[in-house]
Length: 318
Image (spheres, rainbow, N blue to C red):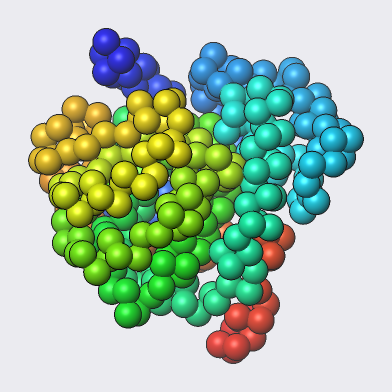
């Protein structure tokens, strides 16, 4: 019944756009526009976002942060707080808990947030480990693809990979459309090796769950694991008990692409997953973002503590 309801909802989603097919010159669909009236109406009906009360809830969230004093806040600007409200369906207490969790996670695992080597992240985006398709799925959700088999542990540590995932999420959350619609993560496990699994410690597993479910201003609407194996099952057993029932219901395992297509229409997927869309590298997506929205992205990253100026100075770019 859930799948039928999902398909009906997807058919009427206001943010659907006709996907671009075989268009190699098409720029990355990084959307910093204000949400359309149709999308705002969808948000009102589905995540309780009411334009008439939105500013009041942002103000109440800010007051709650300072009054309760459960964390040392970094940013409290309206745009930033709105992400937490959208991620928790405008339920004030849940948005506050997410905000506190986010800051507690920064304190608990500063290696992912402090003194990040942007040069390393630049090298990661040049690989085939990550991909962000041009098209959103049929529900308007941003899709993030992780090709686990492309990881070479001797080149990039698990910490650097997690730094990159957080970096990618932070950039994606600049899109209000993504804040409203959420994100779908797809993990291609083909090529997963025993060497990779050995890196999965209980602490690392906990941090991955924090990122996916409890500590980032991002609403994860679906997780799809392709081509699972006994090695992955062993690693997944470390995190299974940490995942809430709500998130567990959104996790799907696929031994073939046909079962994936029952959740995501292949006309929105890239060629590499048997879809109709041109494969588009993450590096191209990111470069297109910098070309069209460079100053906005730079300002955002600096506000989140990334050493952008030092990095640009080191490579001779202003």
